[in-house]
Image (cartoon, rainbow, N blue to C red; front, side, top):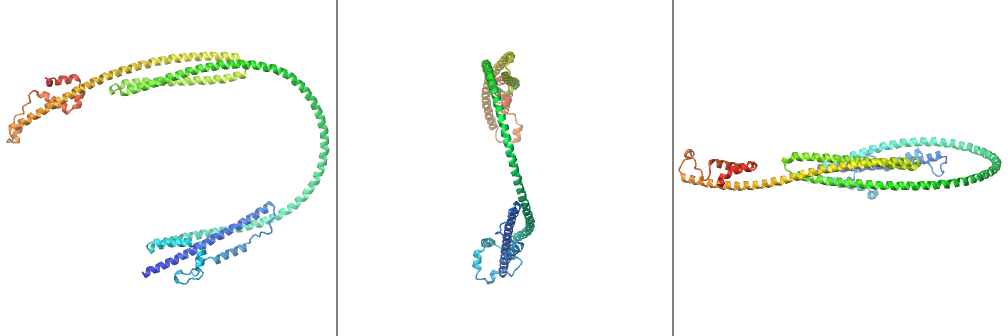
Length: 485
């Protein structure tokens, strides 16, 4: 117990050392903030010197000696981590009367309390030692990084001081340049006065020339007005001609719109026909799925025909798309027709010929659609015939299944009778016989009404019902007619 108490005392002493080191690092951080403020002030002064404005007399930039004094004062206030005399052991019982006041003002009291609470949560002193060692290592790393930062800031401070000296020298040079510029400005003012007098004389001469130019300009304006009146009469005639041409163009546009409506109706009719073809193809596909495996070859053949028809329909769509593109080209040509009025009749004749060609193509496409429709109808008729054949076969199959069920029932009844007769024969022979004598004895008599060949056939039917289902109706009737007799 004494050993544990001594270890706990050492741990507490080490924790307080760590806290003192943390306080020292915080002081270093404050010192760095002071250095940053000093650098900011120096930077503002440097900017003022560059802009040419003199620094205010009230602000005094701190010197390097003042900065070192501030740093030494902060070091005297703080506690260095290497001194053990400055960290009194709180467990020795020698506490200062002002200790409670310092604790109240200490910003790190909460961290100490949290650390103590974390140590109390740990069970063994070894775990407490490990936690304190980790904390101590982290604080050492932080202190080293802070020392490096302080060195960097000191270097920056020296650089800023050098820049300040350089800027002061530049400021003195700027003052000299300012005096030179003032003398130059005075000379420029004198020169400007002479230039103003010369400009006044030139302005007078310019006004005289301007008056002469205005008189000449008025004369030319009167001549231009006379010419404008002549041109207005000519323009009115041209407007009337343009109105007549515009009316003709409107008539042509109306005719073209009517033809476009007719073409749109034709396209819609073709789209409806195509939708009907697609719906009918879907119905045929559903009917083909219901057909048995035996008709698979015929189904594939019809599906190939359907795919070919779809492919041809897609080709028709592509042709329609090409025709639409041609129509867009004709629209572009029509716009060119508006710009070139002289060639309107020739373009209209060419357009009419192309429309006739389009009508011929549309007629050809209609003929092709009728051909495909007839082919589809023939395919549909073949499908209907196949469906009828399927229904007939299904009926025959159901009838055969009913006959098979009846035959199976009869076979089971006959087998039961045979088993009963075998048991009766076994009972009549007696239980006193040996198994060897029973094996060497005479064979069991056959039941009445059945031949041995028929029994074998019946047993084959019971053992293999699937094979019985696959035989034809004629073979089954030929096999089981003696049973019915």
